[in-house]
Image 1 (cartoon, rainbow, N blue to C red):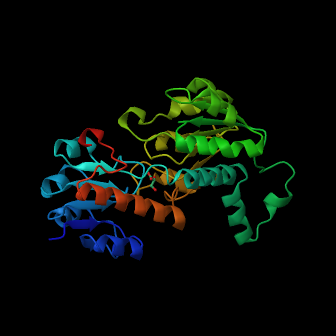
Image 2: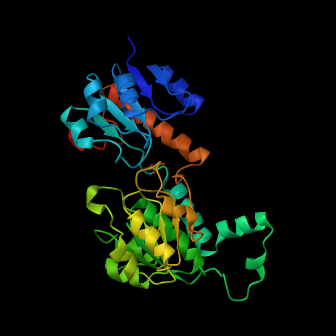
Image 3: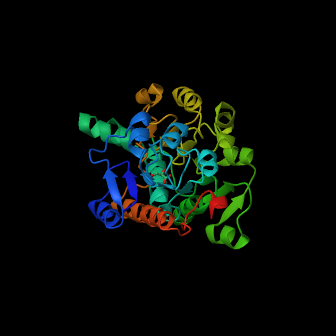
Length: 324
Ligand code: DGY
């Protein structure tokens, strides 16, 4: 008898087909994220779940699914999954590292440049027939990206991909990370490790790229924002909760910093309503990895991980390594 798999979000037809060749598949075809109780009910008789970052895989879901062997997250981040609870039950958790680095770095740059050059405001002005920005000699003006200082907090694979793109803009790159990256990478990326406070004080653009954990909750709050230059721009394409949204809304409102580019928010899909009236915040709905090629690679990686776990092999991207 085939093992049963739950696919919680709409994925590409070829991905469902590949899964159906090996497993008995229930697929969320109308792509409405299931609330936890429905997710729990549908997972109850499954051995595998292919999940998205919008699915909270917690005690409620796990307790309802005693036969579950693997949660394969179609994401590199796994903060939507209660990993200790899975480990306790012997349930393997996997993610999709490596395949979305460049795509997420591209989006980070898109937000950085959009905030710097006031793209969203300009777009809205053209649609209104308002050409003030085009001809103003003094204000409102944007910020130069080239030759500026870029500060990256979190210099993993994606942080490094972001730094690599800065070389084309002749930027000075500062970074802060728990440990220094190898010297050869620092040289390749022209990046200098500095203390976080110095990075905040000297950067024209501060990019946050750390995976979420309770240890980095509100890593950037009112005190950190206060250290930034009044002309600086903050970009977060990592995870909601790493930046204190209430503090950032206050700072943007008071123009304590010049702007922000944000792809992630606390409590998604909810949004701090304070952002809505702020022209100096450019907002996107968690689309860091959202290109067809990358989403396809993420799905393929997630299927490979899920299949390995259900077929008795160690998944290549096992997160709770104690279950190898
Ligand atoms: C990830 O992979 O963690 C992204 O945030 C989801 O697109």
